[in-house]
Length: 57
Length: 530
Image (cartoon, rainbow over all chains, first blue to last red; front, side):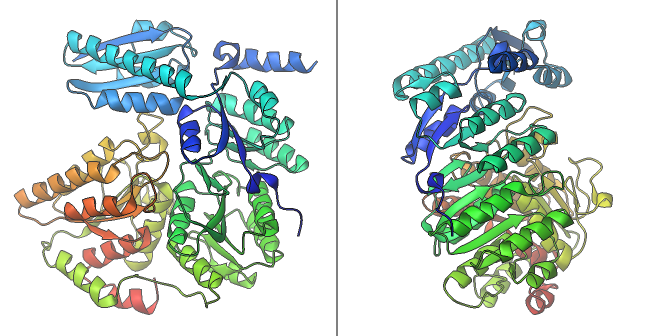
């Protein structure tokens, strides 16, 4: 048997998107932070992909 | 009716929030329809089809929030739009007050919390893979709640995850429970030694809720609905099995899915065989023989999976169970219902919020009575021509895209109007013998679904009575007493409205088969354990 995964023993969660899920996690006493996500590049996905590529250069 | 809209430029809100706003606005007096949505092309298309697309919204872009209302008067429209604005301002205030630190990007959050190990992604489908990939690059496991992620992205993400030893739960993963913490739509369950890996969200909710009343649940790992397709190859289920195999807190494992592609099925069963812990496998509607041949324990229904896992965990021989109450009691209940039916009332009408439950009920009714028509049929020829019109035994899944994405309505777990309308329509049909319902509780679900449906049950029964008939209603509630909605009080509300409430969807489906056939299927049910 391998070493059990840490995220199963002690999940520390980043919530990206619906605030509702962050509230649910908090109400359960979870260790969590919230990302108030907004569409990148003004919601233009192709532009967002392009920016991602530039970032990686 | 008067259609009015308002656009808020560059104001993004998440879809669950907007769904709730739409639902609340829609329930106000004098409102025929209300939508709060991002002005994406897809959403504009929905509005155009519904005849409520205004020029203002047409000109708006995907980063703009739009409120569209259809009301009795221009004054009412303005009031409703103001109300929507108030709700948004209130939510923004709450976010600023209650959340200690708000991060704008995943990178910023990960930098501030380097010890974080799991990212829950619920952004629009078009952007979900992007966030998930970043999470993997940062070395974190991911759960993708979002749907609408292309299959090729799912395959790519899962391969990256596998390479790095990171789990990718989803896309379209509705439910996971990690160390007692529910992610997405999950019930509040007691902790214990039984772990679950599931490709079906409501399936996972059903099995974990039932096990919660027994030995309890260690973890629920959701895989997303396409994981066991050929293209994906069950990457997440295979990794999930390994995680639970290595987890000292998990002693018994349950696997839940629709029948996988044959090659994937073999891989999963071969891996499960190696684990050395008892494993119960429920491939709903699949062949139990291949599971038995692999030395694993097959289960035919979600409840059967839970019951067998609990028996194995207690060191008992796994047995099938048809009803939890005594046979005498069940027969008496069925008789009380069917003795009041008119001869022409012959059919079951299943009105579902959970696709897995709908599928399970059809399988049970098929084995006991025969074919049923559906919008998610067991065979292509049983597909309803019009999902809104029943034919003989009919089962409708209101969680399907045709009732949600395509017409812009929230999921039936939080929005009941379409199911309520259908219940009343079925009550008017002199051929309807019994209406079958599922109700799903837990985080993410509506706070009082039984309360909403109980009112409709009373009205439906009254409609039938006015037509000189008795209408039978059978329901089951998926949840636990610790859920925010409280299982016990939800069941009481349904009973109070005259419904027969069964402890599981499988038992509820069997009860409807008994009622519709006036008890004729009893012997087969008991002898063949169907």
